[in-house]
Image (cartoon, rainbow, N blue to C red; front, side):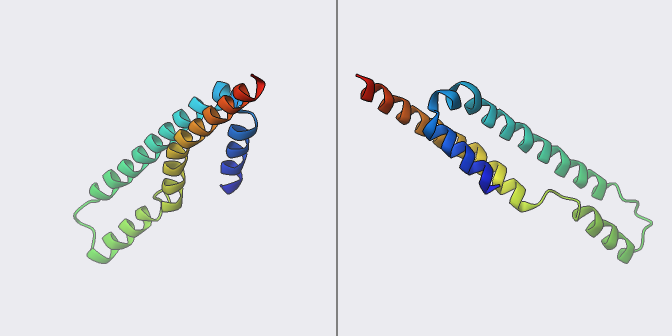
Length: 107
């Protein structure tokens, strides 16, 4: 995960025009799409938990709910995708600064 962030940071700083043209919006769209998929997955797990039959014994019901809960999206993945979404704004700003610096340097 840190490798992805590092590569994007280097791209935004070293090749800002490439970053702005090809990566900037794609990172944000990909992060939003993955967050939506994670949300749908979590909602499906909640529906599965709520749909358990009432005839199950309490111990069995707890075991099934725990088993379903173990299939949820890890917190680290949520944090990373959220970080990537907000980092895309920072990287976009960094690329703008780098492009401005290159223009000033050429003039």
